[in-house]
Image (cartoon, rainbow, N blue to C red; front, side, top):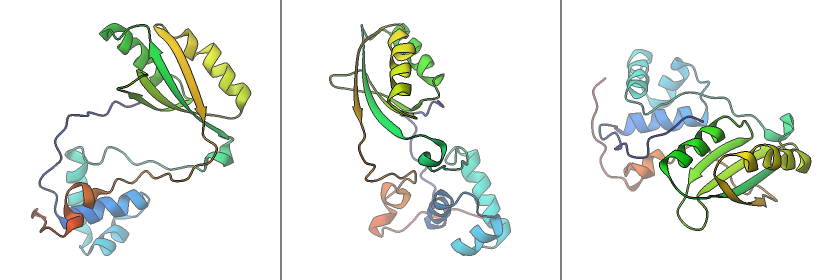
Length: 180
């Protein structure tokens, strides 16, 4: 699990074209530079320069391929609340390192509220979930309580961030200019 900084400031130099580039790439990361340039209204060279700048600034972390879970046997999606014995820095680090090593854990969040962590776990079936919980999760140092909830139906799933809305471009404010 790649750590994502929660304290980075938004990049303030993004303009409307950058927002369009990000939106297009989030919808289809396989676009060629020529196709992307055409969609955002740039020639290929400046488009590539902008994409590289977005990568260099850490706005674009990486490009991935999304897979239909059912086609690879990921039939059961479970949300698991985990409470630790205590919240010491050492136990938090041990738990987070363990979660990073479990392929079944798709997402892991340190939470406020009743549970310390919320996990999204994907497995083939209930037997695989049992094996994960009993064989891995419950054996993780510091775990004191585990509560799980099965997802019956996925109503909405998206990976694309609403970049325009987050940066205020969705409310028609003028975009800041960027060169190239």
